[in-house]
Image 1 (spheres, one colour):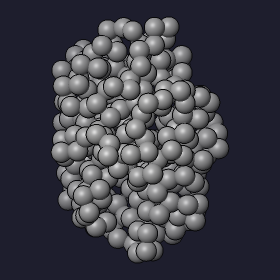
Image 2 (tube, one colour):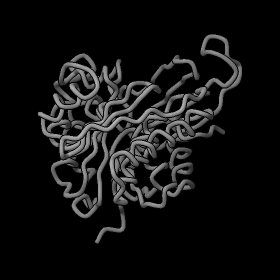
Image 3 (cartoon, rainbow, N blue to C red):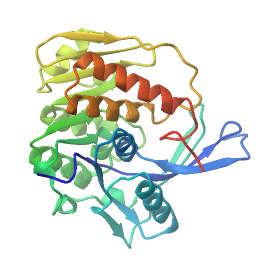
Image 4 (cartoon, one colour):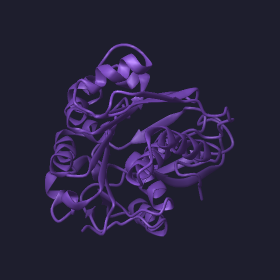
Length: 292
């Protein structure tokens, strides 16, 4: 029996968030951490489950800060390596869509399957990885595949396509192998169209033909739908709320949905839990709901 419920793999950067305007005009920035998989870990812990994050951080103040924040949140960091040659990545962003990354050559871009040595992947109830990891470089991509291949629990993949990364120009080629190995696939409609055509249920069924048992299609804040393992289609339309900072909302959705499913909830209940968690994060500044 594992002492970890969910294992997530991916990069986390020091994130400096403009809180009084766009990147072009702001004079005040808040510091936080930014990384899809670690953001999800924070939310999973909030929901009473044990989450471990696997990654690499630089031997630098940014890496130290990320370790401290995630440890304070209760995330298990036993399998986060310190890379003494490469730096922790940096993200500079605002709350209206402006973002700049400094992550080429980062510690996490050197993730290798050896970083999974000793990680109790086989006994975890679930694993989580996003397409971002597959786009960081060939070795991170291989590490993501190794995580999914070793897992015996629920395997969740969020497409989470990003531009400007090593593999962004051929995202379908690099993320596709993750899609074919997962049980639960999540993505925005535009992201999922890397793998199938259509909208809503039609799109989900096309993606399911590649292997996933459940496919979740997010359509901004308007609706989210899920195709379940029995072929049923369920839609949830959350109440409209004003977003203060939508970054990180999708990660909270993934975590809440996954935690609900692990707890035995049906798809409809899990969709609602995910939507509620995403809305709470989007209502405050920071990837997990707080900047410092």
